[in-house]
Length: 75
Image (cartoon, rainbow, N blue to C red; front, side):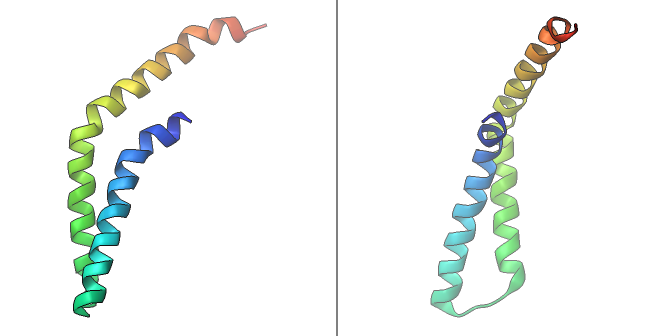
């Protein structure tokens, strides 16, 4: 569940931008390969800049909880 939460913002943005670019390409019949990659890369980088601190905080919290509970797992 945590992996899905962490990946969802960047994957969602990439999918939405990819869909929009595909619709524009289908409407204009421009089939340039770089036209699909550049907007997606830019959108994912922007999503990482915006959501990055939250993602990092969530992962740090998860890791500290795992490390704190580690001694209780030993026999």
